[in-house]
Image (cartoon, rainbow, N blue to C red; front, top):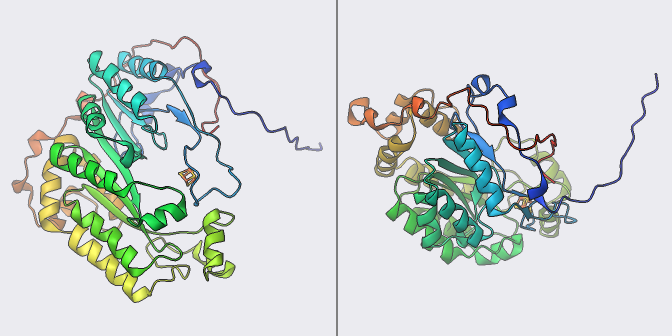
Length: 366
Ligand code: SF4
C-alpha cells in the first residue's frame, strides 16, 4: 500500500476564541491523572488557557514572525470556564498563557469577577506574567482573587539589551512591582528568571542583572540561565554579526544547561565567578532561605515543596530534609501543621456538569 503525505494549506488563525466550545473535563479520568504534578509543581489542578499566540516579537524565536498573533478570550468566557471548574469541584487552576496580563484592564476585570463571585480558587501563573505591566491595584486584585504563585521575567537589567532583544521591559516598573509584592504579600510565591551571556553583553551589564536580583531580597525563586541561541532565530543573526560562529552555535545546542557555552563571549572566568556569587550569596543565602521557606509552608505541602526545589537543585533534593539542610534548619524548627492539606484540594468526583458543547480541537498554539 502506497502511503502518501497530503500537505494541506495553512489555515487562517482562529480570531474569535470565544466561539470555541469548551473542554468536557468529565470525559477524563482525573483520579488517575492527578497522581502527577503540573507545571506549577502542584496536584489536583486544571489548566486554563485564556490567550493564544504570542504578544511579543522578541529575538529568541522571531525570524519571520512565525509565532501566531496574540488572540484573547473575553473576560466573561474565561470567567465562565473558571466557574465551571469550580462547580465541578476544582479548587486550583493554572494559567498556561505566555502573559495573561498583557491586557491589564481585562486582567483586573477577571479577578474582580472572581472576588465578586466569592470563588474560593487558587491560581498559578507559572508560565509567567509580564512584570512591568502590573501595578499595585492589579497585584492587590490578583492576590485577593486567589493567586498563589507568579513567575516574572527580567532577562536582563540593561535597557540597551532589552531593546536589542525586542522585549523593551521597563526595568524600573518591574523593580517597583517586585518590591511591592515581596513586602506586601510575602506568601505569594514569586519567581524571577534572568539570563546571562547575551551577544554584546558587557561585564557591567551582566553584573547589573545580578545586582537587580540581590536588591529584591525576598524572592522565593530566582534563576540565572545561560543564553542559548537557536538556529534561525533573530538572536542567531545578532550573534553571528557579533563574533559567534555557526559551529559554536551548533556545538552549544547539546551542551548541558549549566555549562557556559562558547557562544558566550564574556570572559568565562568572570562568568563562573558571577554565577558562583549568585548561587552562594543569593540562592543559598541562609537568611533568605529561612524567610521564604517559612512563607512557602503556608501555601505548599511537603511533596509540592520537594518537587519545586528539585526543579532548582535536581541532584541535591530528595526529601524536605534536604531543603531544610540548605537553610541549616531542622524539622523541629518548622511548623509543619500550617501546610495546606491535600484533602482540601482533591476533586470530589463524580460531579458531572458537562459544558454546553464538547471541544474536540487539539492544537493549543494557534
Ligand atoms: S521567545 Fe517567547 S516571548 Fe519571545 S516571541 Fe517567541 S514565543 Fe514570544
